[in-house]
Image 1 (spheres, one colour):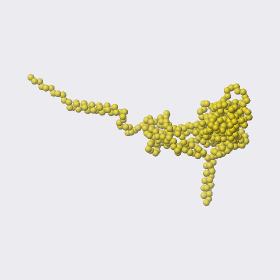
Image 2: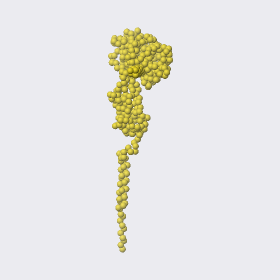
Image 3: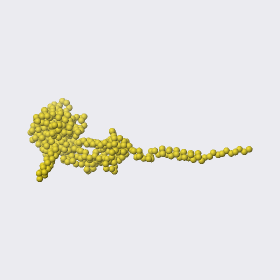
Length: 440
């Protein structure tokens, strides 16, 4: 009985350790712990996703992101726009290194964001407007919540990025506007990895309220409200110019526009949930499960291929949906057969099981090749898979004995032999006439 109890306890400990290992740990840094009350819906969203959420003050003396070279968290949510200096062992360079090592970060700013937050945003290709500036829209604002500055804007949902995997289901034309109160963002045009998740209406601009405009401010759709970055290592960063955008007050608020339209709730809730899932890599995550290749009619890959062989290539890709890996469905996954440059580029044929396949002929050029699948789409993690193979020329026993292009040479050879044969017959059998004897 005692060995059975020991094995049962051991199994329970192993299961508990595996469950703990699978838990995603997320650190939420705030200016004041009151943010736990004002942003409870957002924090509940994190918990519902299965994250172990730790809320700490951004200047807490015991703060640390890594210990003994290992990161303590997979995600960092920085809801502390007013922090002047991080506490403990945390620093701006530490957060940048965290992103470089594949960590995910969400940053929320405000019109009074500190230089530390602005510098962090600039590290990922996003610039916040000058201190004190706010997004102003005299035609799209909430008449109830606004205090006359027209800075509580009700931006149309049409400004969302056309990528459902990032922002959720694309809203209808009559969908509720999104409430926003904060500063405007500008994206680095030289950084192709930064995306404008939400831009303001064409009637908006970013400037200090009640200040006379002397220079052309950032205006129209150039004013970005939410921005996202997916690095080449698949790390994700979301930057918002408004901490209030994620607050319970704006998520549950009714929207009253100057045009007299009334919406029961704003569109913030659905967008916040979708963007959070994407930022923390709960959506749009792909992985390669299996790659196989072989000659047509065979089941295992050869040590080398021969030019003009017919090849079958298969790659299985899965997508993370609702916490489970499911077959990825798409009709635009391409395969390249590369030797320095692609000799073959073709679209793979999808299947319901997530297996993409293609049959093609090896080029008539031998060398070292790669099967290369590189899939980059907005909102999805980068898929990059290569498999190296060798391609040799024909063996001397594999060449055709009589090829069509050599028929003229065959004809000339046989005609020469025939000519020699006829000449020989004439030479052997021809006799010269004998001279007749002279008669007297």
